[in-house]
Each structure stands twice: as C-alpha cells, then as structure tokens.
Amino acid sequence: MGISKEVWVRIIVFLLAWLNALLSKWGYSLPYIGEEFIAIVLAAVVSVWTGWKDNDITKKAIDKKARLKEIDVKENG
Image (cartoon, rainbow, N blue to C red; front, side, top):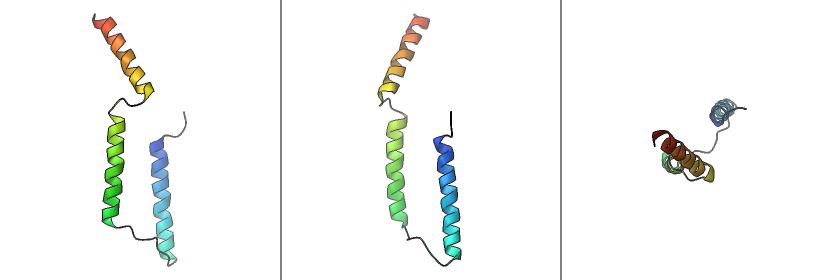
C-alpha cells in the first residue's frame, strides 16, 4: 500500500522544523512570512480541501456513489 500522504506531510514538516532550527543556530534565517500571508494560504487550502473532500467531484467518486445507491435500492426494495 505504501506510505500515506499524511505521513509524508508530517515527515516534511518535521524536517523543515529541524532545518529551521539548524539554520538559526548557524546564524541564518529563513525569510519572514507574515501572519496575514499564512492566514490567506490556510484559508485557500481549507477551502479547496472542503470543496473536494465532502463532494463527489471526481468520476470515481460519482460512480462509487451510484453503485452504493444501487446496492441500497436492491437491499431495501
């Protein structure tokens, strides 16, 4: 099955945190990203995720919903 996306995200965030800590120790700093920019990016990501996750947008999801409805009709008459 492989490694899930969630695991990859946690690994990348973990490595970025260590990279930031090491760069700070050596006197380097990453460019400052303001709270407003972070809020806008977060709102955009959540908006796209919400629209995609809970709605049947892909062909696979639409087909799956139709098959589930067929099964339900057969079982419940």
